[in-house]
Amino acid sequence: MIKTWKGRLAETLAIIETEEKNQQGNGSITQAIKDFVARMSDAQRKELSESMAQGKYAKGVPQGVEQVNRKYRRALILIYAVRCGLGVTEAIQYAKREVAKFGDVQDLSNRVRQELKDHAQRLTSIRNQLGQPATWAGWDVTKYRPLLAGAAIGRRGAHGPGTLGCFVRKNGHIYILSNHHVLQQKGSSDKEIIQPAHEVGGSYTDVVAIYEDGEPTLDAAIARVVAGIRVDNRTPGGAGFAIQGKSDSVRDGMAVKKAGACTGKRYGNIISATTITFPRWDLGRNVVTTHQIRVERDDGADARADLRFQVQGDSGTALCDLAGRVVGLLNGVAAGSNLVGCNNGDVLATLIQPILDRFQVEILPAGETAAA
Image (tube, rainbow, N blue to C red; front, top):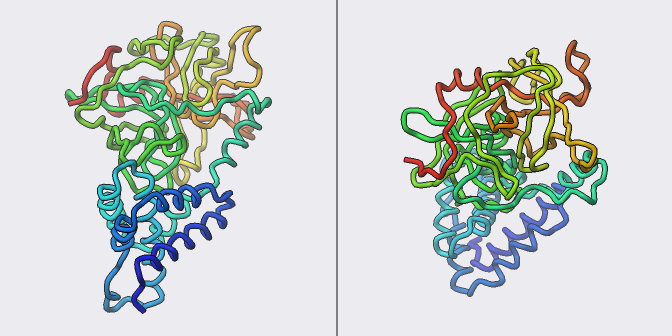
């Protein structure tokens, strides 16, 4: 049966609503999409519906498989069209082009479900981790242009966020340096890095860099900044600070600071500069991170007790000495560890020198610069 454009749109909205419920969502994403469609003219709705038309069934493909494939392709076209932040005609063209990259129904269905997850549950989880949930305002949602160290970033198609650690340079090009698990998240085949991340309002067109290389054993990666994007190796806000190269001295008890997308600017101490290894199954089968040091928070007697030194969203933050020289990259909190030299709840950071050596990069000086 040939579907009318009204029927095709109604069917696709119903698919999205069902999948959002399956992901324990509260219906807010479905409602936002319905509101978007409701504001369109009939001609625009028809144009959107026709972008979802798939034509005749392909030969040699079981009809049942093709029907499922089409269902998720239509849903993803509609989701992308709503979220890409463009005019209707441009949005439809963008959505069709992006969805055409997915050839496998499993990839299509996984992406749709990922788009419709209930992200409010993550916010609640983090607030509970912080101890006094009402006092945490959430991640930094600001869109920074020029890009700044400490901004909330994420891989396009993976909600994030993580934190932009700092900018580095190689062969005349500028790169973002952050964690491997931030710039190459599971569940995303995209190489584009966006700022801000999807979780905090980023659009599919907010691309600022392209992933280039990663090293799981250091939990570090680089992404080349898109030509024309301006960057500044300093952290946001009135209390922000400039990144001043790398630290050549790392010692026990050393005072450090950082500015992450979740908890903002915090001070701490290095518990132990003696490096350890730490197993990280989230980075790949049997991956063990190396060159790890341990850090604890130390903000003084007047500090807000609810904010730990690192929480989800701070991953990738540049750990600096008090002069702004980079000591390492924060990458996580040890949980349930019984390893010698590492206690449950310790914040872990990878030393910066092995990272710079691995990617053959140098830290970019502070000051506004345009990527070439």
